[in-house]
Length: 137
Image (cartoon, rainbow, N blue to C red):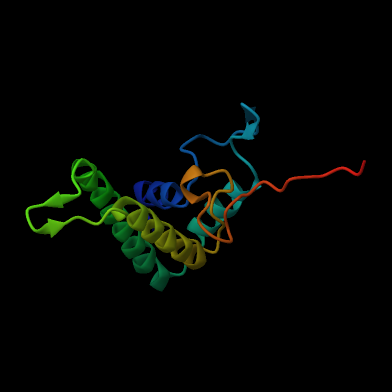
Protein backbone atom coordinates (compact mmCIF):
# COMPACT_ATOMS: atom_id res chain seq x y z
CA UNK A 1 0.00 0.00 0.00
CA UNK A 2 1.56 3.32 -1.05
CA UNK A 3 2.21 6.10 1.44
CA UNK A 4 -0.84 8.17 2.29
CA UNK A 5 -0.75 11.96 1.90
CA UNK A 6 -0.34 12.22 5.68
CA UNK A 7 2.61 9.82 5.68
CA UNK A 8 4.26 11.75 2.83
CA UNK A 9 3.84 14.97 4.82
CA UNK A 10 5.39 13.34 7.91
CA UNK A 11 8.39 12.28 5.81
CA UNK A 12 8.72 15.79 4.35
CA UNK A 13 8.45 17.28 7.84
CA UNK A 14 11.10 14.97 9.26
CA UNK A 15 13.41 15.84 6.35
CA UNK A 16 12.94 19.52 7.23
CA UNK A 17 10.82 20.60 4.25
CA UNK A 18 8.33 23.45 4.75
CA UNK A 19 4.64 22.55 4.71
CA UNK A 20 3.79 24.75 1.74
CA UNK A 21 2.24 24.33 -1.64
CA UNK A 22 4.61 24.31 -4.59
CA UNK A 23 5.88 27.81 -5.19
CA UNK A 24 8.96 29.46 -6.54
CA UNK A 25 9.61 32.45 -4.34
CA UNK A 26 12.00 33.98 -1.88
CA UNK A 27 10.82 35.02 1.57
CA UNK A 28 13.15 37.04 3.78
CA UNK A 29 16.07 36.07 1.56
CA UNK A 30 15.47 32.31 1.90
CA UNK A 31 13.96 30.22 -0.89
CA UNK A 32 10.66 28.83 0.37
CA UNK A 33 10.71 26.08 -2.21
CA UNK A 34 13.58 24.96 -4.40
CA UNK A 35 14.57 22.12 -6.66
CA UNK A 36 15.02 19.71 -3.76
CA UNK A 37 11.25 19.81 -3.26
CA UNK A 38 10.81 18.13 -6.61
CA UNK A 39 13.37 15.49 -5.62
CA UNK A 40 11.55 14.57 -2.41
CA UNK A 41 8.12 14.61 -4.11
CA UNK A 42 9.33 12.38 -6.93
CA UNK A 43 11.11 10.02 -4.53
CA UNK A 44 8.06 9.61 -2.28
CA UNK A 45 5.98 8.60 -5.31
CA UNK A 46 8.52 6.06 -6.57
CA UNK A 47 9.42 4.16 -3.39
CA UNK A 48 9.75 0.42 -3.71
CA UNK A 49 7.10 -1.60 -1.88
CA UNK A 50 9.55 -3.06 0.68
CA UNK A 51 10.86 0.44 1.51
CA UNK A 52 7.42 1.73 2.51
CA UNK A 53 7.56 -0.05 5.88
CA UNK A 54 11.09 1.29 6.47
CA UNK A 55 9.89 4.84 5.85
CA UNK A 56 6.92 4.35 8.17
CA UNK A 57 9.15 2.84 10.86
CA UNK A 58 11.72 5.63 10.68
CA UNK A 59 8.98 8.29 10.78
CA UNK A 60 7.48 6.57 13.86
CA UNK A 61 10.90 6.59 15.54
CA UNK A 62 11.32 10.29 14.76
CA UNK A 63 7.82 11.02 16.09
CA UNK A 64 8.78 9.23 19.32
CA UNK A 65 11.98 11.27 19.66
CA UNK A 66 9.99 14.49 19.20
CA UNK A 67 7.58 13.39 21.95
CA UNK A 68 10.56 12.67 24.22
CA UNK A 69 11.86 16.19 23.56
CA UNK A 70 8.52 17.66 24.66
CA UNK A 71 8.55 15.48 27.78
CA UNK A 72 12.13 16.59 28.54
CA UNK A 73 10.98 20.21 28.75
CA UNK A 74 9.54 19.53 32.20
CA UNK A 75 12.91 18.29 33.42
CA UNK A 76 14.90 21.35 32.35
CA UNK A 77 14.28 23.02 35.71
CA UNK A 78 16.03 20.35 37.77
CA UNK A 79 19.53 18.90 37.80
CA UNK A 80 18.99 16.40 40.59
CA UNK A 81 15.95 14.60 41.91
CA UNK A 82 16.74 12.96 45.23
CA UNK A 83 19.70 10.70 44.49
CA UNK A 84 18.87 10.61 40.78
CA UNK A 85 20.97 12.97 38.69
CA UNK A 86 19.33 14.05 35.47
CA UNK A 87 21.27 14.12 32.24
CA UNK A 88 22.11 17.75 31.47
CA UNK A 89 22.41 17.23 27.73
CA UNK A 90 19.20 15.21 27.30
CA UNK A 91 17.63 17.60 24.78
CA UNK A 92 20.85 17.95 22.77
CA UNK A 93 21.28 14.16 22.73
CA UNK A 94 17.68 13.71 21.54
CA UNK A 95 18.19 16.36 18.83
CA UNK A 96 21.31 14.51 17.66
CA UNK A 97 19.45 11.21 17.60
CA UNK A 98 16.61 12.88 15.67
CA UNK A 99 19.08 14.11 13.04
CA UNK A 100 20.66 10.63 12.83
CA UNK A 101 17.27 9.11 11.98
CA UNK A 102 16.55 11.97 9.58
CA UNK A 103 19.69 11.15 7.63
CA UNK A 104 18.59 7.51 7.52
CA UNK A 105 15.21 8.59 6.19
CA UNK A 106 16.98 10.69 3.58
CA UNK A 107 19.06 7.65 2.56
CA UNK A 108 16.04 5.36 2.24
CA UNK A 109 14.01 7.89 0.27
CA UNK A 110 16.95 9.03 -1.84
CA UNK A 111 16.13 12.71 -1.36
CA UNK A 112 18.22 15.32 0.46
CA UNK A 113 17.51 16.99 3.77
CA UNK A 114 16.00 20.43 3.12
CA UNK A 115 19.02 22.73 2.93
CA UNK A 116 17.45 25.57 4.95
CA UNK A 117 16.01 23.47 7.78
CA UNK A 118 17.14 24.91 11.12
CA UNK A 119 16.77 21.54 12.81
CA UNK A 120 19.60 20.13 10.67
CA UNK A 121 21.94 23.11 10.88
CA UNK A 122 25.08 22.23 12.76
CA UNK A 123 24.10 18.60 12.51
CA UNK A 124 26.88 17.10 10.45
CA UNK A 125 28.25 17.06 6.94
CA UNK A 126 24.85 17.50 5.27
CA UNK A 127 24.07 20.75 7.09
CA UNK A 128 24.15 24.16 5.45
CA UNK A 129 27.03 26.31 6.59
CA UNK A 130 28.35 29.75 5.78
CA UNK A 131 31.87 30.06 4.47
CA UNK A 132 33.59 33.37 5.24
CA UNK A 133 35.07 35.12 2.22
CA UNK A 134 38.20 37.17 2.62
CA UNK A 135 39.26 39.68 0.05
CA UNK A 136 42.90 40.53 -0.60
CA UNK A 137 44.10 43.97 0.53
